[in-house]
Image (cartoon, rainbow over all chains, first blue to last red; front, side):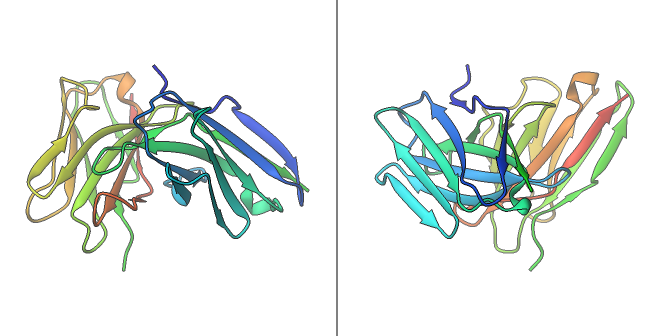
Amino acid sequence: DQQVKQNSPSLSVQEGRISILNCDYTNSMFDYFLWYKKYPAEGPTFLISISSIKDKNEDGRFTVFLNKSAKHLSLHIVPSQPGDSAVYFCAATRGGADGLTFGKGTHLIIQP
Amino acid sequence: NAGVMQNPRHLVRRRGQEARLRCSPMKGHSHVYWYRQLPEEGLKFMVYLQKENIIDESGMPKERFSAEFPKEGPSILRIQQVVRGDSAAYFCASSPDAAGYTFGSGTRLTVV
């Protein structure tokens, strides 16, 4: 049972445009959401997070939006740069000491 | 301040052998988490440990897998009598306070 779903295995975006990565979750107990970026042969790197009490969090080129009623969150990257090409994982937790539940990832490819 | 150190980076084992994966958390971090990533999958939570204690092992397979985080030294993930299905990337993460994970670069286990 996939509690965190990333339905797009890959996404191709032109350099300079906006990249939008989507994530859906089913467990209403999740109250904290994170996005990780992963290059091949490296561990995931934390990108940005959002608490369930907010609907938007922004950090430079990265913005995460949370729609609790739809159980949906998205990561916006603007403008997209070649170095953004990586696999992006959405993760969720019930907070506290719980482990993270990850989606399967979306491979973002930024085309020049 | 070194990041989360995992070794070895690559480990090859024959079926039936034991695999030992090591994780040294960041300095000052007393929370350690192990995750497994199978090919084409997201990261799956395995176990959460604090010094000398297993806090949550709900993601650990019931047999052959064990984890420890002794008072001194690294955390160890041990897989006995490995099978081909154990081939995966194993990631360790640490945090100072059950939030704000930092991941290691992972150990890629190949069972031949």
